[in-house]
Image (cartoon, rainbow, N blue to C red; front, side, top):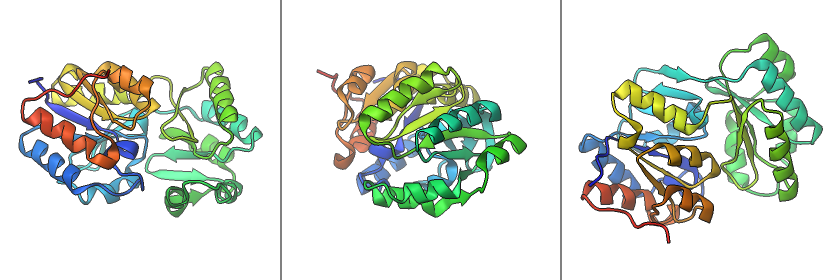
Length: 284
């Protein structure tokens, strides 16, 4: 049995079902069993804390969360940020200018708020797919009349840019490449149509390393479960990486081990397998 001291679990496409909200009873029970066994289960997500609190309410009390793709590690119980890796206002504005020029509707995750310009709220509302997921963005989003001016006046705590609705796919891939060429941010994706930008050096792997230091353990004692591009860094960084069955092939290869899909209690199966001293199957 691997010597697991911490389980880091992605949310969308992993712990959550396809509605981006529901946690299955099996997953809830498995998280409770791990916590009871002294192995904390930590949400490790691209979301900010305010976008996962509803989900946390159905889980056993959780102490830690790694949010905004590792930009922050939060002690949820103490409402304290233990680690932060933030974007500069200047880099953020340069990236926003690029996205705005492409008629993309970006949002800023700053501390515990999601900020958007009114025009971008309206553009987001025209996107044809994932309507329930987009309504969640729009429900907690805060309108800022001039986002550029706001960030330059208030530069602290900029966690992430999320551009959630980019079609066609060729445009999204081109934009990701061009944003990377700017060398101002970590550029990744977690959803079929989005692009996410974090400060250079801010990844889920960095967030896990920071939390391990707080807990007095090593990343080799961590199991990480995920399904997206933004999970690859943590797959390479931990001792026991696991890909969801619904993950793309290259993500499964990065993990080396695979569980069932998010619709089939994949997280519960992974956790229960470890608690019982078993091993998850290797990717074929």
